[in-house]
Amino acid sequence: MKKKFDFSTLLRKFLMYIVLIVLLIAFQVICKSATGRDFLSLSNVMNILGQNAYLLITGVGITFIMLGGAMDLSTGYLLSTIGIIMALIDTASGSFVLAMGLGIICSVVISGFNGVMYAWLRVFPFIITLATQYILNGATYLLSGGVQKTYKGLSDAFKVIGGANIPFLAGSSIKSGVIVMVILVIIGALILNKTHFGRNVYALGSNPDAVALSGVSVAKMRIAIFALAGLFFAFAQIVNIGKIGSASQSMGLGAEFTAMAGAMLGGIKMGGGGGKINNMVVGTLIIAVLNQGFNFMNVNQYWQKVALGIVLLFAVAIDEMQTRATINAAKKVSGKAPAQNQAA
Image (cartoon, rainbow, N blue to C red; front, side, top):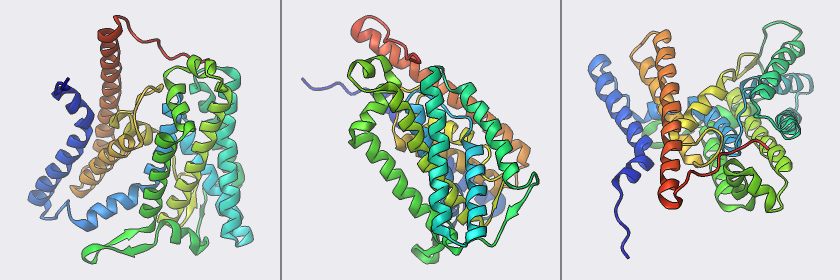
C-alpha cells in the first residue's frame, strides 16, 4: 500500500532548515540595502562558522546529555575551568601535549562527576549541575590567585588546532577550528546513529525503565554520557583558546544556554525522546546567524539579548509542541498517551 504524503510531518521535520535559509536571505537583503555589504559573502559565512565552531562542539556534548534525559547548567563554567587549567599547565611546562592531555582528563572527570551524582541521587540534575557551577566558578578564580586574569603567550599548537587560517575558495580562508568542529560533529553523529551505545542513549531518554529491564545499567549509562560530553567540552575549549589566542575566566560562560537553545530550536527535546546532531547544528546556526546579522547592522547589544531571549522562548514553545505532537500521534495508534520519562 502506498504511503500517504503528509505535508505537516514534512514541514515539521524541515521547519528549522527553512527558518535558517529565510534568515540568511533576509539578512542579505537587509544588510545590502542598509550597509551596502553582502551578508552572504563567503568570507562572512566562514567567519560565522569560525566564531561558533566551539559552540557547535559544545552542542555535541550537550546533545548527548539532553538525549539521555538530563541537562547540564555547569558547562560554561567547566569550559572556563578547563581553559585556565590548560593555560596554567602550558605556561608552567611549555608542553601543549601535557596541557591538552590533562585538560581533557579533568574535563571528562569533572563532567563524569555530574553523572555520578545524577546516578547516585536519582534526581533531575538541575540542582546538581547548578551546585557544580558554583564550585567551578570558585575553583577557576582560586586557580588564578583570586583575580581576573588573561593568559597570553600560549603554545602555537592551540592556534594550529583552533585559530589557523586555511586557504579556501575564492581567496577566502577557513579556520582550523571549523575543520575540527566538522570532524567532531560527524564523530558524535556516528556514535549516536551507528553504535549500541547511541541507541541506549536514545532509549535512556525515552524510557529508563525499559533500559534497565534490557539489562543495561542506567547508572553507568548516565555516568558514561556525562563523561563523553566532557570529552567534547574539552575539545571545544581547545578550539576556543586557539581562536582567541588566550585564556581567561570568562571564556565559555553562557555557552550551555546557547547550546541548549540551539539544540531545542533544532528539535532535540529537553528530557530526551528524540532528535539528532544535525538538529542541534541547524538550531545553533540560527542563533549564530541572528547574532552576526545584528552585528552587521550595528544593532545595540541589549537588543541582541532581547532577541536571544525571544529565541529561547521560541525554543521552549517548539519543544512543547513536539511533545504534544508525539503524544497525539501515540494516542492515534494505541489510544493512549506514551509513558512519561521518569528519573530513576
